[in-house]
Image 1 (cartoon, rainbow, N blue to C red):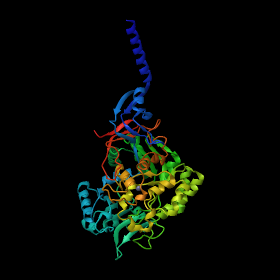
Image 2: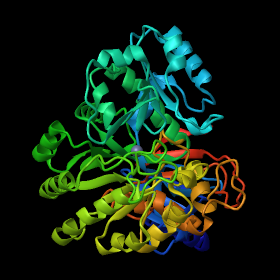
Image 3: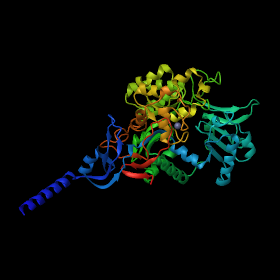
Image 4: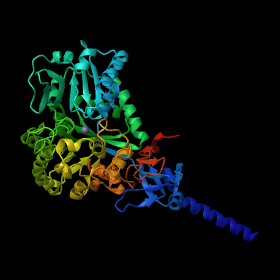
Amino acid sequence: MMKKHNILITFIIFLSLGSCMKSEEADLVVFNANIFTMDESNTKAEAMAIRDGKIIEVGPDRQILNKYAYDASMDAMGKEIYPGFIDAHGHLMSYAELLLSADLVGCTSQKEMVRRVQDYEAKSNKPVLVGMGWDQSLWANNEFPDNVLLNEAFPETPVCLYRIDGHSALLNNAFIKLLGEFDVPNGGAVLKNASGEYTGLFVDAALQLLEGLIPKFSNAEMKTKLLEVQEELFTYGVTGVHEAGVDANQRELLIEMVDENSLSLNIYTMLAPSDANKEFARKNGIYRNQNLLIRSFKAYVDGALGSRGALLKEPYHDHPNYKGLSLSSMEELETLRDFCLSVDYQLNCHGIGDAAVSRILAMCKEAYKRKPDHRFRVEHAQLVDLAEFKLFTDYAVFPSVQPTHATTDQRWAASKIGPERMEGAYAYKSLLNSFGMIALGTDFPVEYTNPFYTIHSAVHRMTPKDYPAKGFLSNEALSIEETLRGMTIWAAFASFQENQLGSLEQGKDATFVILDRPLNKKPIFKPNYAWKTCIKGDIVHSLE
Ligand SMILES: [Zn+2]
């Protein structure tokens, strides 16, 4: 009897000890996982406890399951967990617009392009037709289009078709007529054929002429499509995007959607340097609204390589005497730099050609002197003068690149810049070695949103079709770990959010992806998806 009583007491003590041990409370415990925390020492773990959307502890299953009383638990079934992927350079707005326009992505001829616009006209019934996504490098002759076929198909209706990179557009004559008399702005080109007639091709700053003539989509249309884009990103475990340049209306639309709690993606926004946006920055300073952070400007210093808009130090290999387009002078950059420093904003400059990158680096010299942790970024950095890689360290300039651009452009990059300059092209490893960090993105919708393409391109320097077999300039490949850091913690760093995002550690957002299959490390592309995507502890996407 006595003995039994003792056992009972012991049992009660054990129970109360157990509940005492479990006195720490969590909303959710994720266990039986293969967690890549991406912390400084690359710790791996099995479980994590989450409260109020934050990670409160990461550790072995037994430790976490024994310590916490929890409302819900998730058995990750041994799957891999990473911090939610961050796309350090994307265009939510352009992607939504693309989905509302005639979709020309993947067209293999001008004929097909025109047919797709006809199909679009039939169902959209718009007075001005806008299309996006053609890429002449996918066509048999690789040559820039002219508007002959377009004029035949659309003699009356104005049509404007943007190239995939958004740096040029093909207009039909009905649209050109709307422009009346015009001067080509600095940093722009309007192409003519041998007999002096417009070919319909407008490049870079010449696209400013179209402002006001391209019909805007309604906020309601944009919202629907932005939510579709968000859903697509979630299916891949992408939980954050650095939105690379919005105008004042787009900025307000983002704020509205965040206020309505319809966008839960972490959005780091770069503002276009318009007067209205500058006024916003002056008034608000660093603007934080839940999952939206606005504290940077985006400037274009040149155009794109594919449309010979990139600004080169020496002429194009396939166009002697031509060095590309300058979209911001040194003086303009310096003025913008000073403004950004005065409102504590970051300045992210689109620089593709070596002359553009060189100008940005030179502008950053003074920024570094005044504010060593400015984190100003070069977006793209596709061609860098070999002598200038070290300036990324010297002036603390953050390289932000898109690995899929390398594997897409490998088909024609050498034809534009010639073989000698390829050593400084798409040189991600050299940029990483210089600065010590690199931010990775896709530039969607120029490339696909799929982060597994980014990984394959960065690590193997191959397209999803595993081309080229030995990899494109494979000495510039990143390791898998460097690539993952570029998509998580370094991207967080590039947006001043490293204390909140980018790794799975105590005190950070419980924002993560559980992959459906283990990350593929082989040079053979295999599709993958998020099994579950979580933002601040909430499941925002589930494969089942
Ligand atoms: Zn971009």
